[in-house]
Image 1 (cartoon, rainbow, N blue to C red):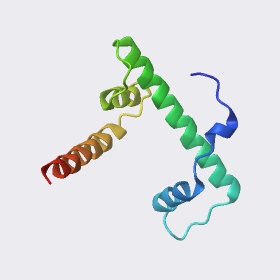
Image 2 (spheres, rainbow, N blue to C red; image 1 turned 135 degrees about the horizontal axis):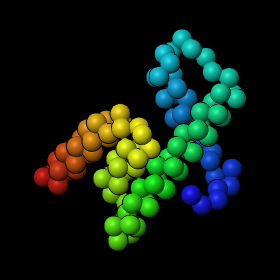
Image 3 (tube, rainbow, N blue to C red; image 1 turned 180 degrees about the horizontal axis):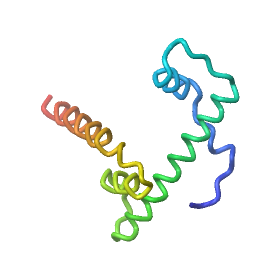
Amino acid sequence: MSAVNPEDLKLPQAPIVKLMKTGAGEGIQFSNEAKVAVARAAAVFCLHVVDSAATRSSASGRKTVNVGDIVAALDDMEVPEFKEKINDTVEEYRAAKGQKKKK
């Protein structure tokens, strides 16, 4: 993975906090440090997935990373439990895109 400036790892806090509350439940509070830590962890995780997927794409002679590269990267990172969720999300996206084309 290429060198990353820590300032580049700042994700918007509102969606991160929303995800945290969804995962932990509405009754749980989070310190500001916890919010920053989760946001940075999410950014680092995304960077690792993208780096692995881009490497896969390049090895296949492609310049475009596709969903197959992302799923394979997650498998490589030993987090295959995301595979089904991602495939479901992609199918929903494709179905919605297909509906827009029909209009």
